[in-house]
Image (cartoon, rainbow, N blue to C red; front, side):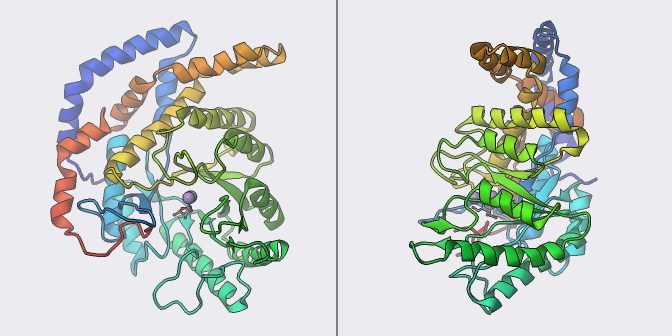
Length: 431
Ligand code: LRH
Ligand code: MN
Ligand code: MN
């Protein structure tokens, strides 16, 4: 397998930090042992953990007001894969990449797959895009795509999704994520029920094109770009559609797609209970779809989501396998640094959730001891598992401090030289 940053450089970096890590790991191991927890078990679980990187996240994002490009942004999907390879090399937590079409269009998907495999990467769910028009496209999505009144527009949107499945097949993906921006900006603009009927009829055609071993993820979002009524606005609508479409249709929870203060962990519990939790787009937000770095605003919420996932895994065993993907936009940071830190934050929440004493929790719950129940969760959440995460990385060949190692490698400066900026080109496609 080829690595982008030299193995010696990573080893050198680790050698400098190794004594400190060993001391921290031993101290943490002793503390956990007194709680009856085997640190080695947690480290092995952390090594197995994976969250996919969104290809669109490695370019600098932007808002509708402005985009401030960074240096050395990837100019095509092959360069995006190089950046994704660096993220995985240093974190050893992101072997999957989620592509977005047509942003990641290539004439040579086989070469793309080969490049990915040479870096030890694979493709997670592919995303379709019918929320913006593409050059040369016959019918506009201005008034909707899968729900459009115009049958030819709907047919075009359906065909795009089927094309995505075909491309994904060549790349080795096993799922299609469908998020549409369709909706209304004015009361009365849509017949609310009619729009959902058209959505379901379009989705049935896409569903029919899914290979036997594929899943289809329905991603809901409260608002934007539709500011009055989004057709797939919430998990209830998503769930009803997934139930209607069939076994291969599942719901995808993007953490940023809810009203502030929504109890997202409860949504996760509900979807898991009814076998419809397909996957996640992890990010964080303060207001709504801010696409901020995972764990940067509300790490406790992230922990509580993983607490529900740990509960579901315990109940359902190996059959419970939701797809974990990041979906973030990086406006003021180096995207590689943000994605590495975010992957580690998601992994941290996962490990902390493994530490919850579920037997004690159940005893407290059955005794209606609200305070001790909450404390049982807090005990796990308050435990600093950084040494476990770092040890998992070292053992898998990654860096003790991914951001420190990345900065020392000079990768961004080299990318800036190799990839001179092109005026007016968006790295992510999102402006
Ligand atoms: C919509 C969304 C969806 C898109 C991505 C670019 O807000 O979360 O997942 O595919 O952003
Ligand atoms: Mn998303
Ligand atoms: Mn979003």
